[in-house]
Image (cartoon, rainbow, N blue to C red):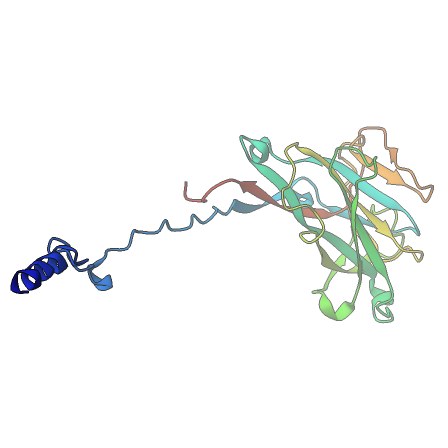
Length: 246
């Protein structure tokens, strides 16, 4: 029986699942994790603000005008640099010089409204127009007393006026991607009272750039050489891909 016992021991050792050549698994702390790719943040567009049009740079105040249901505006263009390469632009602010006769200003009851219309092309045509209307509250504006020149036509004997710049914010209604052409059209429109007056430049500017709707629902391009333009200031944003420091 002894030889049988030895044979059994040898056979048992030879059939063991244990391997002397295998090593225990490495501790989890010793394994180096593979680096994860950091998410790539999209680059913000570079936005630069500038003045595209300032009436005070090309003319001076001469008159004050306002009529019920009238719309009056200008064909203008931005500098060609605003659309170079991948650049685009959009209007973000229009300022209008609103005015009231001095004798009337004390009695004004914050009841008037004025509208601004922006067309993304050189003529006031087509369905795409962006408009905003603001009520004129005396307490919200910085008023200045001024006297119109003696040759003012529309204001008649009301040469003494109170004036303030009324700003229209267009940034929330004009598409953020902007435009890649230079021509555009901006007009203002009066309410049913025809107030407030709006300051007008001297009668020496280009007439074909000036379009007027006298309540008919359609604009007419003015003719001649010497027209008066509304006192407007227009701010734009120029957008270009990438960092402003590039």
